[in-house]
Structure formats: C-alpha cells, structure tokens
Length: 266
Image 1 (tube, helix red, strand yellow):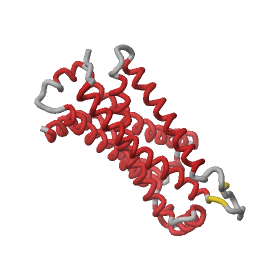
Image 2 (cartoon, rainbow, N blue to C red):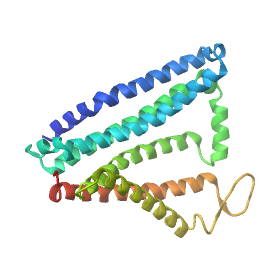
Image 3 (tube, rainbow, N blue to C red):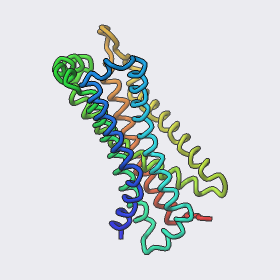
Image 4 (cartoon, rainbow, N blue to C red):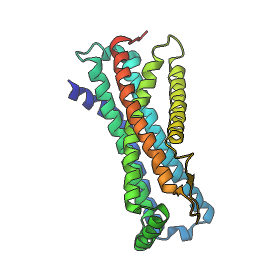
C-alpha cells in the first residue's frame, strides 16, 4: 500500500513540478544558445540585462515555488477535506507520512539537482570551459581547498538540506493543526520561530566551539592565527548540517505522533 501511496503522490506533484522544471531546463538551453551564438551582441544591453534578471528570478521562484507546492500538497492531502478520505484508507498514519516525506523529499532533491544543472548549462559555455583550469586553480588558492571538491560538497549539502527542509515544513504544518483557529498562520509562526531558534543555536555552537571567539577570520594577506574564510564557512555549515539532521529526526518523530494520536480534521 505504501508504494501505491507514493505513486499517487508522485503523480499529483509531478503534474505541476515536472513541466515547471522542464521549462527551466529549456530556458537554460535557450540561454546557452543565446550566449554561444552571440545573440546578445545584436540586442540592446538593457534587454540582455532584463533576460538575465528574469532568469535569476526564475531560479529563486521555482525553488521557492517547489517547496510551497509540496507544503500545500501535504496540507491538502492530510488536513483538508481530502484528509477525511485519506484516513479512511487501510493505511497507517506512519505510512501516510513516510510516503509524503519520500516523495516530497525526492522532489526537493530533484529541484536542487535541476537548478544546479540549469546554472551549469548556462554558465559553462565553451569560453568559460576553456579557461576553467586557470579559474579552478585561482579558486582553489582563494578557497584553501580544491575548488571542484568545494562545489561538490556544497551540492551535497544542499541536497541534504532540501530533504531535511521538507521534513521541517511537514512538522510545522502538523503543529499548526493542533490549534483550533488560524492553523495556517500558526504553522507559519512555528516555522519562523523554529528557524530563528536554529540560527541562535548555530551561533551559540560556533561561539562555544571557538570559531567566533578564540580565532579571527583571515581576510586578504593577514597572517595572524585565524580561520580562513573557507574554514569559517565550513565550520558554520557543519554545525548547521548536524543540527538540521538532528532537527529533522526529532521533527519526523513528533509529526508521526501528531498524525497518529492528535489528528484533528474539524
């Protein structure tokens, strides 16, 4: 039954998300031809700037829209009128949650992969690819680590964050349903409050670990005992990632409990 739930949920989400991301890839391919064919040389500069701006806005909009749509699907399928039907099926609340978490998390991962791919398609034109070894060497020197390894690490961290982020959103929606009124507002407030709390915890962790106190950040050519920009960034990212995983596990367990014991569709 779990596989059927996942297939149904995948179809429901893919109806919008699949063509949306396909259009993004198509826009990236057209943009690449626009650049490699030097079409931009035959159009006014303002038009070129507008097209680039629209593309950047589309990246942010599609990423945000994907999370919003997955959130709305979770709410509609379990806490709206559709939820009455869902909970009459011979399926446990845990299976409902697992199916939606896997599908929602999968689409969050797909969204991250396609956005990265879209950006690479547009940016890695022959002129850039030809000079990539020099650019990579310069970035490696500046970052203090292999630039390719750095980009791969950032990509993997974004994939993990995308998946854990969906679990957090589900948790906030479930908590919002515990209130008798203004449930969507309470879910939003829960999300904002939890995000602020996590930021404070990451900051305190960094202070206690000495990242922000016992060492300073090195910029330019300073040679005092310090963290490089990359070491500082990776330290903060590591703390954030560990906390995100722990938070996701706790959020999933609590969401499972709410769906099993505290569900309220009135």
